[in-house]
Image (cartoon, rainbow, N blue to C red):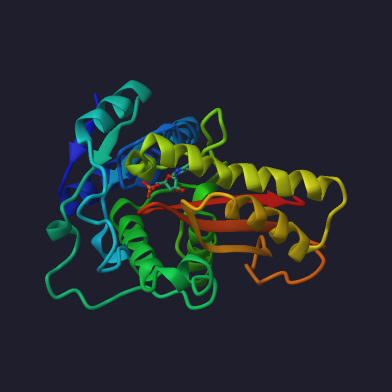
Length: 283
Ligand code: AMP
């Protein structure tokens, strides 16, 4: 049985008890509306820890004023049954009022890796992410925590935060999970009409095409970006916000030849829905 905990002080006391029994704790932070991408993180945590805690919190501080906080998809009952089936121990689902004091005035700001890409189009987003994730780490005090490479920049920003602030947790990156036709799994895919979903396939297809060109010897970043942009341009329903090639570790922009491991990252609007995708080259 999954125990549901909604209060931060109860969560704190519960993990303190597990820790005193010498049990290892894995934390999987999510915003719910769970899919196989989330569940792959959960499975890794179940394998590596005595106790697995999944948090479900649609964090208001990481949404901008014109973003989709209010309509973000939610289905706690279905989430609970997936977690039950997987054998998760605790679902931590606090309310915003329980997570944030009304006069909260302290935030965590990573000031380099969070600036480009999604940081540029979503000002304040990573400040909200870092703040809530550090709060979750303090409340749960996990030994290990699991993040998906779907949100590649988020993963790098959080690794930097943990390093810089000496947070005693191991971050375990997990591979990006796709549908069989290539679409990256995302809770926001629920917003897509069938036509939009079809258009959205161009994101992964363009990344795959670039990957093939790279394997065949194309090492020029502008040439690879051209390949991607020419595929995205074919569909007027797609409005790219950014498509960039960056160093996979420090996220510095690659403007000419690729000579290290890189990430090709993109954010594209499909109708009103903003989707992100990425691929790593040269691992
Ligand atoms: P979210 O609920 O969107 O905040 O995501 C919670 C966690 O699940 C984050 O670490 C995401 O990177 C991860 N995640 C979401 N979608 C995927 C996916 N398709 N593959 C792997 N991890 C994912």
